[in-house]
Amino acid sequence: MYLVNFLFSKFFLKQILLITLFTVFLFILSSYGLKFITNHDQYLTVPDLKGVHLNDLPYIMEKENLRFEVIDSTKFDPDSSPKTVISHIPFPKSEVKKNRKIYLIVNPSSYRKITVPNLVQITKRNAESMIKSVGFELGRIIYKNNIGKDMVLEIQFEGKKIEAGILLPKTTKIDLVLGNGKR
Image (cartoon, rainbow, N blue to C red; front, side, top):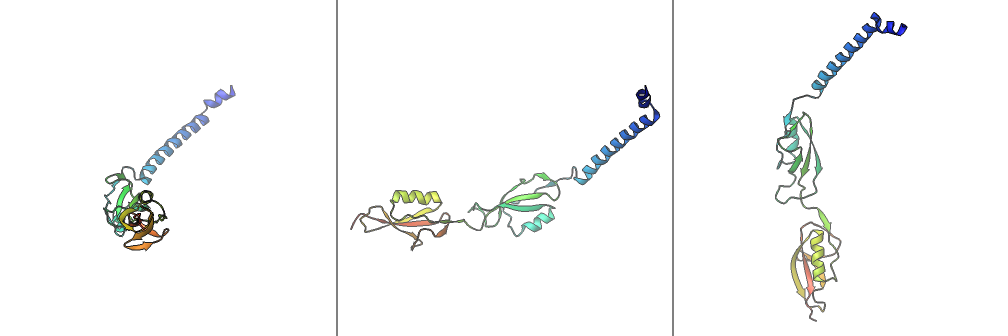
């Protein structure tokens, strides 16, 4: 009986009313506070940065109230200028909040350098497949008098003999000196 009287007492009902009002006040305060803090319904449009040089980006991004970070610059695109933006995330014309970070993929200054494989004393067919699989291109084929027909005798770059293991830019044309099967 004491519990029932307490539940319907003015003191208990007053406390329940105060808790309810305080909860509603906190909900309204946090709802409007979050809208204000997160800039609700205030969007910026991401500009198309494709082709923009890396040196021009800080000015453009500051003007647009955005930030940027280069996440990749390993795949060289010969159709684009060096050190320019190839693509970015979020994409152009996307809506983002103020001070959002834009992730850029930038064209490097040239192809990356790779190691020349050891091609001496293997057949022309194997040498061609190794050259292409590494990322080089096959240049001229030069024949010399040697008993090993279509055997690679030396590797050349721009008319000069080179050794295996040196670094050359990807897609470089490598010339092969082969034996013609004659003594």
